[in-house]
Image 1 (spheres, one colour):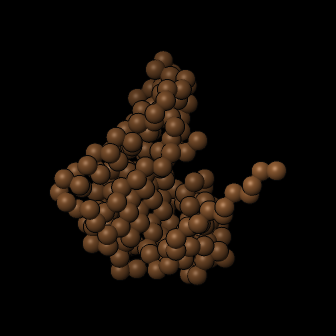
Image 2 (cartoon, helix red, strand yellow):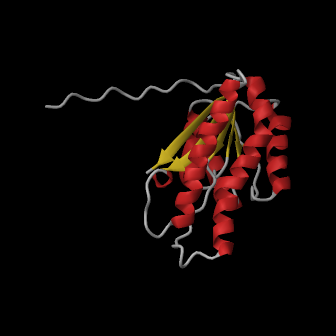
Length: 198
């Protein structure tokens, strides 16, 4: 008879302010609900207001407080800026940024046109770069943490998802480079992590 695995222990996020992008579905929604259970104060971003509201209700049931909703498309620079501003104005700080928003578009070099390519790269890479750039001063002040959600597709080649694989590889490299610069500048007060999805 196999021994039972020890329960997974997670430290408390009580009182920490977390901004989660892509919170209207998938990994972003699941992360939001988990963070609510751990006591985090949440700002939730997503493009689908109906689903974002559903996630917020689940967070409220699981957690202690009503999440702040900051809906919108982060490809729009003003929306990204307002997302950070509203979060910091509402809570007075930012401790965690979860860059989970992303899209997957099927296609190869023969079938992915430039419009599709730009949409994937702008959503999965450019918006992450911009939002992180805006968040870093607040995260350095709070000795916070950034988690960039990536994928096994960033490390391995798969057919039919060329632009997506490229975008996730870029996120992996972005995370490594920004962490390196942070260490070189002795800004060990801000932690950078990449987490891959299956």
